[in-house]
Length: 315
Image (cartoon, rainbow, N blue to C red; front, side, top):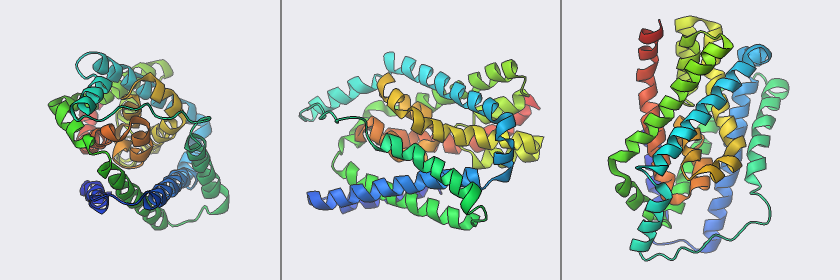
């Protein structure tokens, strides 16, 4: 998805709800967003299940990829929490902003049990993998691209509708200012640390481990670049490590939400621009949704520059 499409869809959704929609219409839109999210998770699974290279090598290198992915998430979250505890207290900024706006901060009603989406999203990914592997292995990549595009357009437009009811998101962004640039930097450093540490421990070529772990959830381009630069096996690392970042972010969301306000953003990384935008937004709230989106955009713009740079560094 091109960089400007998310902003166009968000603006469209915002305009739709500018004057306020009836509650029954908002409920229907929320249902459409939920169904689109399930579709998106299924398409992610399909991409995994229909890839012969990925499926045939999961047993051999899958564990290495998972360790690199979890390491990148762990170190990104740690660095993010340090930022939140020092110069970027996200929750404190939110509370001050709401107080300035005179908005009553009612505590959200406790759910009776966990959010069903926390179970539905991983199941949708698993279902997509099974479908792609055993039921429709020959599904056209163009069909998957169309499904992905449609689901993302619906998700962004629906989120724009929600933002119109929580306009403090724009004020929140203004309060953070240039400090927002520290967020993608922390996420990137988390990936680099994971690649260096676990590349050494697992005996993986550092060019492979660091490049893949620091590609931050942007799986299509790193997979292709690393295949051309280092060979097929390296390309599998570039793809699988970053696909797993989406999967692990979804699976770990209940834990991430408890760690800090920004932890889901740190885990979602580049995916905050597209596939992880709605799951992360639901976890962090509308005030931080635009922050998550911009972090994802910055990372997405940065990764194409990072790939040739990493090749220069590691050979």
